[in-house]
Amino acid sequence: MLSSLAVFSQLKEINSFGTADTVVFASVDRPGELYVVLKNNDVQKFDIDGTLLHTVNFGFTPAILEPRDGSRIFISFRENNSFHFLPPSLQPRLEPQYVDSAFAITPFLVCPAGDYNLVVLDSADWSLKKISLKKNELLSETVLQDTVYRYANFTYMREYQNLLFLLDKNHGIRMYSTLGKYLKSIPIKDLSWFNFIGEDLYYIREDKLHFINLFTLETRVMQLPFAAHFAILTDERLFLADHKTIRILTLKP
Image: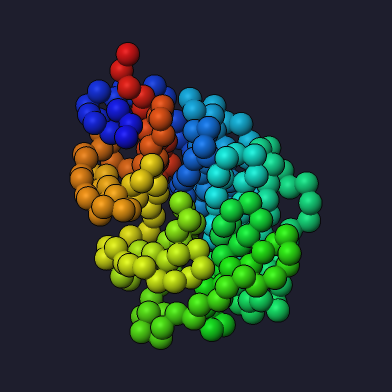
């Protein structure tokens, strides 16, 4: 586990800057570079010290942004059911791709699973479908129980360590295998975002980071040094985004 998790009081701020609009999503790739989505639909990429590297605007707010290793960034949009695999520059090299209607009629959320697979939450029948892009075939399909989707507000989906996490803002996070088998739930209401580090899932509540080990379910809580809507931990940095302000902190030497 990161040493920076141990004592947040040992962190020092190395940069702070404003954004053109409110930050509505934030994530990092494996090298630790920061990606933010603004309310005006700008998608921006910063290096680990906060230097702006690239900006792109597709005209829609991304439903899912998954930077992964930074060489093949995934982005999907609900408005036109499209998705892209972007290069590090964020500038599309190819036309957008679309989920084949033979597999999913109404793709509500689409996220990557491995290098050449997608997971789709299809609101036509509220099913989770895993699709191979390489073979253009349906790998698995699981229909959610009506007691799940009838009262749900699904807002986010992500694959991590061969598990699928589906965020229902009304009830919490539902965990599935990558083949769609339901495993367990983490009951946290009104959650709009979460992230991962190592074997931990973490989220913000009342200016604190709450950690849950995915395998032992052990929990711990740590006070953030500043208020934030998004807090991203890496081996080198703590990125905090609150409204139109981004702060970057690192361990004191």
